[in-house]
Image (tube, rainbow, N blue to C red):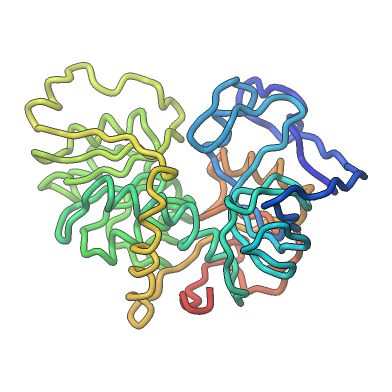
Length: 351
């Protein structure tokens, strides 16, 4: 077994050299209710950086110190089982270590069917899709006809959120950096109102939403959050999803009476609290199949050795969609854009 461990504490944000590969020759036995899983795909999560060498745990897992192996949601093949619900040969999805194989608790896994497009289980039907749905619907109470601004819209959660909001009948405003991402959102995902985060956000937002914003889906923080609060309509809502901005901890409001005057609600949430929303997400994906199927958008890298660089590319915001690492060659030969992005609309029944 080969695994990736944290080799040193990141100083100014993680770099590939902060990680190292370790090979373990021993093969320990399974305890009751455990399964041995061969990792096929891993979907990397930007939120992981908050636990790398910081000593801080989050709702997604414990702090990660030197020598520890990070985990991400992934797809694996069961090769041995002591859990009644799983047998050798089953495909499962759940939280998996950055390793070629591992022993995990069966209760943390969910069986899935073999699919021509397994990437959908890590994108629109996976952790990022559920984050988008729960943030918009369960927490944000998005209604048809409302105006929603979605930041970091070309990322893993963002590409899911813009599609979900659009299918729910909202007016969607997406923000992203650079023409490649902007054109992808317009051309491939069909989003009409896309603004460039590198330009003046307030003036662009005023142009596309002069009536104001009902819901802001915030994955950035900092200047984006400040602009959104000033653009809010009365009784607007802000859902706090992440902090990917260059200065997410900078000042947001100098006068908090704005929240009182406009009756604005700001709500933080963790997707781990909203597993019950999965059936609703899957139902929505199914309902759209006959019209405009939702896409699972992923930038795919190959092999376990690519994990450190892929993770750092994710944090730098250089890739489109979910960043997925293929450890078993299951995506080989799939049609992809020249950017290395796979955008798939395979039906839910096959996913």
